[in-house]
Image (tube, rainbow, N blue to C red; front, top):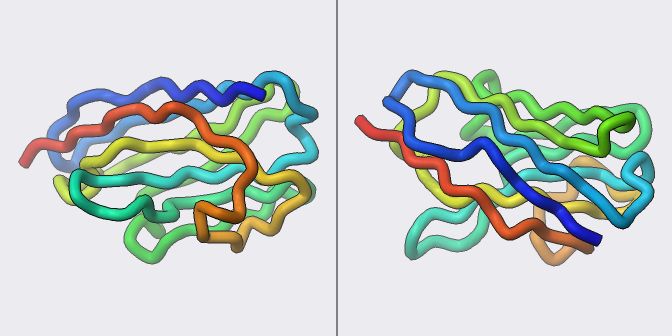
Length: 124
């Protein structure tokens, strides 16, 4: 199984970025996909998740109304559209996969597979 994130970069506060996670080696439609982030010196934190079945979504309070998670089962990709970015969003962003999991799983230990991460830096 391989998860590969892309789309990170440097953006000014108020700007937007779209992250993508390309999955291979698994039956993508069976997996709940999630995004976590980890800032320097901090623990990895849940950002958003999208369910394997009906595609229901769940977000951390800090990103509600600004971030949107989506998936394309035909392309085996999960995306995170990030708008109105803030300096505190600066972190390495990771995608994660959990077979048949609930989108409300917010602990990293609940996910089976992880990508290598992509850096997002928001300047003030």
